Image (cartoon, rainbow, N blue to C red; front, side):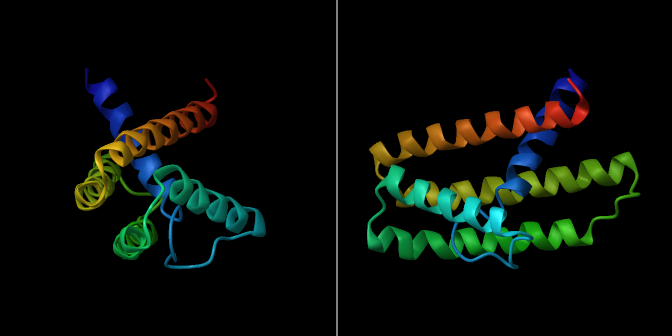
Length: 138
């Protein structure tokens, strides 16, 4: 059971950290033009799939930016040689940042948008799981 919990935390954190640049202005430029292009496609995908109104977009974009900045600060402060316990603490903190973000965005969405939002989040989680498994050589 502990392994399943740890795996869930790792995947959730990978999702949170890897999607830190998925919407709006981020805390720093992506490393490559491919990453910038992927970020722009993700942004357009979210706007299109959720059919955000200009008002919704104006409210949600700063939430994405704040989340991105928090995750970037967490990532920048992390020590690659940290203990397993410290890494787990970082994972929990990243999960908390992501959970807070979701709690702020969901009230701004309609019922139909919430359904699509969940679908987008599930797709992103599956992508993160696949990347995690690939890195582990599974």
